[in-house]
Image 1 (cartoon, rainbow, N blue to C red):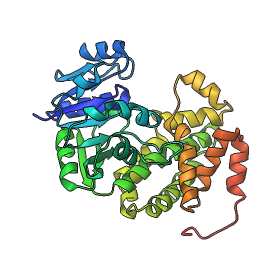
Image 2: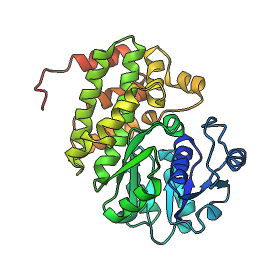
Image 3: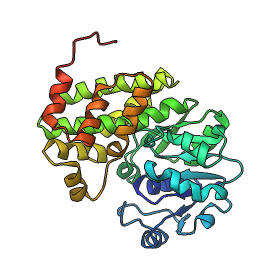
Image 4: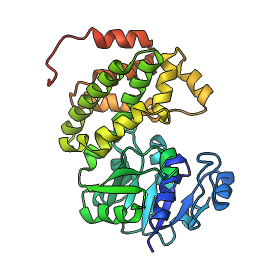
Length: 332
C-alpha cells in the first residue's frame, strides 16, 4: 500500500486525503491546530467538511516529522502565501525521492513564483519530482463522492503516473500531463477571474456578462500561460476551462462568493469579517498582475481586480474601465 503524508487540514487537503484513502492509499495528515487533528482522528473534520466520514486509514498529527515518516509521497495543501515559511521547517522531513504534490493554486507575493518553483527552491526538491493536481475539484462535492476528474501534471511522466495511481478512486478520475507551467497558471488565474464573475453577479448582471468575463478571462490565462512556457492545449482541459467554469459559476467557490459580496458593495475587509476567510484570488491577484507585467502580457480583467483589491476601486469603476477599452480583434 502506498503511504501519503498530507500537510494541511483544510477543505481540499482533507477531501484529497479521503480520495487517496478511497483509492487504497494510507494517509497521515499534519495539522497546526490540535482540535482539528483530534476531530480527524475521530473520523471527521468538523471545522471544514463536517459531512465527510473519513476512511479508517486516514489519521492526523500535529508532529510534522511523524506525518512524513514512511511516506512514499508528500502532499502540500496549505495556503499558497504560507508555503515558503512552512516548507522551510519541513525541508528536512521530505523523502529523498518520490513525488512532492502541490494542491495549491496561487503565485507568491513579492517573488511572483509559482508554487512548484517555491517547492523546488525552499524544499530543495528537484523540479522533476514536483507534481501538480488541479481541476474542477470543489472540495464539498468531492467529499460527497460526486464524480469528478483532475489533471495530474509533472515534467516526469512516471511521477505523474504514481500520483494518479494513488488518487484514482471510484469517483475521482485523474488524467496525467507533462505541462506543469500551464496547469499551475490556469489554477492560479482562474481564482482572479472568479472574483470578477462574482462581482458581476453581485452587481445584478446576468449570464451574458458572466460568460463574457469567463471567455475573456480564459484568453488572458492563455496569453500569460503560453508566455511563460505553458502549452495552449492545457487551457482547454480540466486544469484550464474545466476548473475555470467550476470556480466562476459555483456558489461553493470561495472566490466566486467573495466577488459577489464585493459587487454588492462590501469592502474587502468587510467581506473577510463577514465570511471569516479570504479567497485565494484576493491574495494572489497582485502577484499574478505583476507576473504578467514582467512578461509584457496584457491582462485587463486581472488588472482591474488587482486595482479593486489594492486601491479600493469601486465595482462601477471596474466595469467602466473594462468597457471603455479601445476596440480590437478578438484574437489579439
